[in-house]
Image (cartoon, rainbow, N blue to C red; front, side):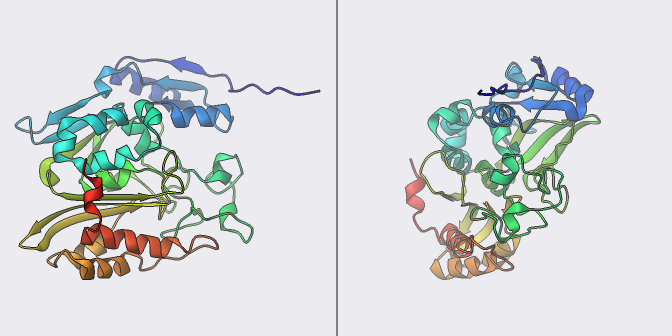
Length: 342
């Protein structure tokens, strides 16, 4: 006789219409609450019954979490993107296209058009790792156990970390995250104690800080917006993503860079990669190494070598070391930059 299991465990659904009400609900329910943004990642967790929250807080009715607007002392120093703004809105926004094209390039490579129509920027940066052991409910370190199944002789670890692994070798899957780091974005988080603003690179955490999550959000916290200052507006941008398939797939590795060239030399630069570690990595050593040098293949070659210093491959992902080296090389030297123009 066939046994039919319920698709989802029962939960209370709340649909607040303001940030204040949403944050109060999250505070009230604490660890038992689940934030529902676009729902694409959430429904996977809930249908598979791996996550069983008692309360789901649906943010879709909060208009103040949507849209792209200017912000700053004079009203136009940068842009603020509501956390519930869809990825499609970001790709098509004229100011982002004109001044912050790096983010548009990254977001346009997320999954498929249908998913970008529903998925949100807040959800993209806050999604959990895609390690199949963890997402299948295995009792690994990240799930509260005492083993990393991917980092065993029998483990499948082709997509896992080559840098900064600490017990857990799962990686961050976001495409928008390295672009936001390269643009020096700030994340606006509502907490019990009020509003907190953190640098994009500090929003993400590795297992040495908290092995159970990929970001700083604690129960009761809510990401409300992402601010991009005008510091890198109109800079020379580069984004590249390598994946197994040209649609839907998460990155094996991606790279994002923003740089200002003066007199043929790199005057200033920010560069970040994702898919190499549990958190997107800003490559400060690379930035320091190339600053003041010409943007050419030789500088790119040197930058690639610097980028992979300390990388340690697992049994099936040694390919990520030359891949990361070459992605950084191309981001610095500008090879194939024209392919990202629309």
